[in-house]
Length: 315
Image (tube, rainbow, N blue to C red; front, side, top):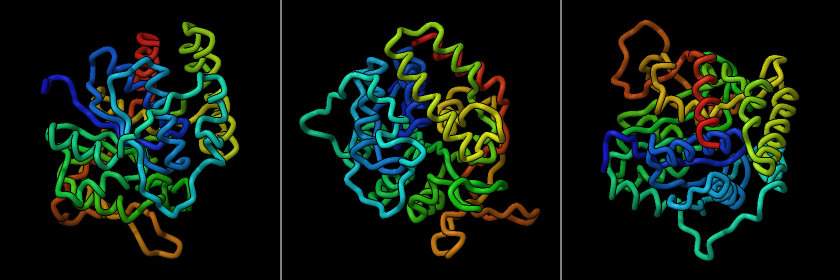
């Protein structure tokens, strides 16, 4: 395995901002900046059947045909976010795309993760959604070299409850297992991703050089997400949407844009009002050994410049 190029598995639940992050990663894969060994999907923003199809759509959109896609067969009894992402998970914009080609035999996310990690133990996992698949992988005593995850809220309010962020609260048991078991992890919480507002200016810059059908889809997806982010007051009145999951891709290839600190992370699993809360100890006291680097700040302007330029290079 060529260790000079990051080799990764992407575990995701696309989802509008997940889809955007997935397109970015697939473009970098095509350019040879990273090597995606597999994409595994899980339920979250919408059901597992839809997230699987959306991952396939992303591969088709970017004409990446050499990356296997896994489908989850795990049912987590937790509300999805289709009221935000649309029934198709893509702001109901999938009508602008060709009918997705679904393989006759789908690969299992569990099996694809296990097979990929056993063959490539130095691979990193990028997660854009709930950590259900990763916790199941750890139960088999298989651990990635590093995991980079979007999720949680440390010093800020949650986005599904006053204290909980969606990815973590969807399956807090799995999240807690991951952050207490994985020896090298990076967490990008709402504290930093809430600064990443993708505006109309950035959208128009990317769409300017695109072909009509793809541009129509991305414009519809973006405008839908603008609307929902504004409705739920996620962007503090700024027209745009938060590209939460794109932060994971950027952390992999542009780590110099981020700052943070190592902190112990636990997830509340039982509280009537606090289930799904990301808990850490910010006091200036002796800390137990911790392996989670929690990102606390980002250079928003350079982040957007880098992302937009990458999109212009491969769309």
